[in-house]
Length: 293
Length: 300
Image 1 (cartoon, one colour):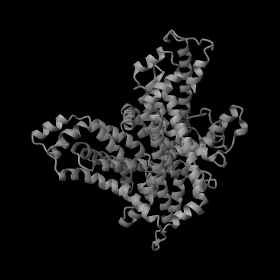
Image 2 (spheres, one colour):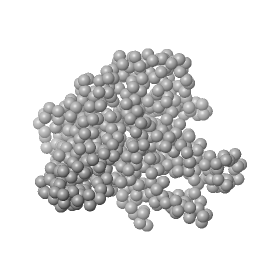
Image 3 (cartoon, rainbow over the protein chains, first blue to last red):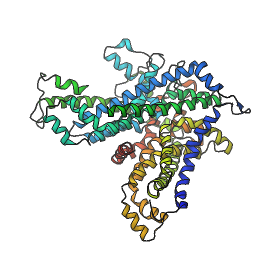
């Protein structure tokens, strides 16, 4: 603490940021909570409906549940691609002697590109007529029977809209994990190798425990980003065909701005906030407990 | 996976070991394998972008009929001409630039101020304020859309630059606060105490010591946030209607014509034009950006 500070000076520095943050983030959360108890289309008078929106969401809305499970699937695919891919590439990268910087840059490249551009790009990659990259590749590998219009097939569309999101940010997580991996003390690794440890034991017994704090951070980052996924499904399929690629976020958006049902949309928003807090809590709980055992 | 299988196959024919390889054979087989794997993954990562660029140089006919992996039969720039005719790319880029600058100024200045109050000045409820900022990192941005839409329409902010800048800055503020406070921890207490003894108050210390020392962190914060702000789609899509204010992501959608028909080669040309500014910054400053992204997560 600075000796010559006054109460006033703390306020001078703290109030402007809190005002912006309050107006843009905190107040809207409370407003959503408030609106979730009303029925309102933005024009007529607001009508207090108590818990009716919540009852409707949990018991009478199939689309909500469909979107919820889709969002979990989307999250799972993103996590596997991002964290799995990141850990694999970061580990491989530490065994390289040259070209690490180049690979880091190339691998991060997709993260700089806007979701709109990515959506356009992947629409072409998945396309069947004219034949897109993916179908052409399958054809060459003799897997022509798998060729399909990936975005109009209800069985593949969810995976098809999740993959670009995973692809886009895996470089970001790779950087973070790589930075943690190269900070593992060399003496520890060398000692283990002298004792005859295999690469796998080296990884599970020395490297991974060392990077666990960073792993927790990246898991939380990837999870919260996965749960806020919106742009790519919205732009590529708008949730379709049917509701096969509808996520909670896109469903909330449509409820608000297509059906102008602001009350019910806010109810879904509140659910999304709670879902995120629960997810982060669960990750901390599970990964911390594992560390202690 | 690879780490498991590599030691299990010591009988593999000794690969022609490069002269630089060490004495033992196993690591070099492992190394070859990991090189091949890395090369494959990097190709998957980068090829779509290279393909996008090549397509923007192809003629429409070639694109519609040719082999998607094939090289263009002839290079043409007419897609770029059409891209500039269809959309107002210049204006889109300018708008993105204004929004990115506006948001970044707020994020840097306010982030630094909050971190200064929390980390340097210190006050009783500082833990609570830190906790409040954590919420902004966890919750998805979409929850602010409906409330902000309603608030903006009551105060007439819909369809303005501010309508995009406020939430973009607000949701990026927490990360900025964390980056600045973790940097401020490294400024030795003695520096402040000496300045205090010389009679400098909190404002002078902020302006003369903290601000000039944090320039590196400013670069980091700006670079990391610019990626997200430059490419923002959701706030712009929700709050902006007029053609004059459209940022790049919204402008891109103009290339979808009637009946959802897309002029693909022109679209890809437009994509190439609009990703260039950020790509250049990224390639020139990628060391700083990579360091920023790394430290953002490991410290935050």
